Length: 445
Ligand code: PGA
Ligand code: ZN
Image 1: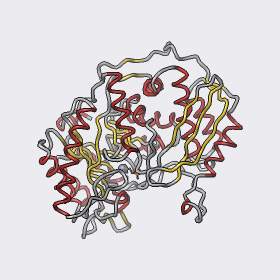
Image 2: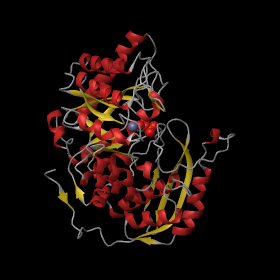
Image 3: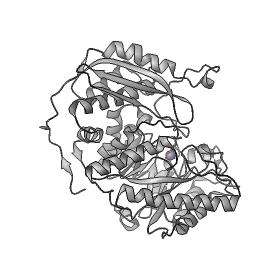
Image 4: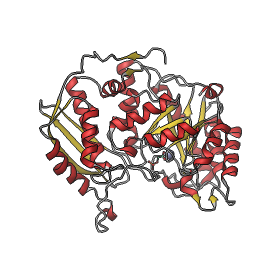
């Protein structure tokens, strides 16, 4: 990226210490009404930061552990009182009074206190909210916006905002599994700013809602991330309807607005293959099917086209899509540096889907991001299907120069808090969206 401002190690904010005075946490509810954790980090000089974390439904097997109480009489076992207690007791006792020069030092201490590879002892839902609350407190102490704090962690400031990929239709685990394809998203490729992108998508969403009301004759029900979820006859019908909505909104499909899909194939993969439709597909046939979608529809990004353990076939998928669509790994990679390294070695993907709670600290997520970048990959920063109204994701996506951001639809406040924060950042900085490379350029990866 041209215009990048490399922050030198002589940056004015280095050399400070952040002394923790108190860590505390609270069980709050996410957008599905399930418990999650909000933590507050109070620094000794009086600056504080509060952050809450999201939770997935379509989760990868290699994700960091989300500690749930397991008491079936309370929130069907999903309570987070143990994770909250780990912040209020274990972490507060161990870390209060201690000074940390950097985010990395704090995150290292959190990992050591947990002592497991996947945060199984304290829970990623105890560790991550503290990591993020510290980031917010530290950015306040430095008197800088949170996105700038995240940019400094990366060492580079990119004066751009990520391009949004916005949920239009949902199936799979985010809706009633009426179609196995989890999400069809729209990418406003010609939009130059976040404000322009959202105005374009509003039109497409309204047209999609009208089209569905006509076609399916029903009041529209929304999926977890706000996508429309009528009873599609097939995955192909979702894509047909998405193209129809783009056209009805007066845009050229594939020129003004393109499509992205999150296939989330792990969740319909069984021993005998992929249960995408009436016929069970083997990995070869699944790749053929994905390629047909990319040929037939303006699909520029394919996430989790294959199952998370179908490693052998991922490089073939990437090779088949190269130059036409991004091959994005979510469940495959789980924001996990070890899995990303393996994928880089064998050429299994060209885009990292980054979800901070898959790995459990800010520093490890940054490591995953940098690793992907070092291989020339793109990075899509993503929310989860169970979100809170916290907006740190917007700052993180700007600070770490995400190419895309995936937050969900533009209909629910837990999503809009992030879109609206992006609008605030746009207004404060004047930064445009990252230019869209265009299909032809995708093969330069
Ligand atoms: P999740 O879904 O948050 O339910 O895992 C999001 C995605 O699959 O990208
Ligand atoms: Zn996904």
